[in-house]
Length: 78
Image (tube, rainbow, N blue to C red; front, top):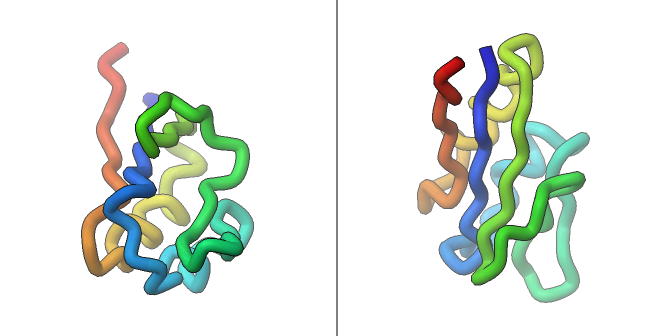
């Protein structure tokens, strides 16, 4: 099973909870927000990454930690 993680950078308020939850995927940016490492830039401040089920737990932790719900996770039907 695969999952799509979507990050809306425009919604981000720079709480950095995602960085604390998963510093391997999230980094502090110079503008006070975060960057989603290795994610595809889909335009308009939206970034996404496809991951396997085995790798989903840190992403779930980041999404749950975000106070403004800027990180969404959806299952990709097979």
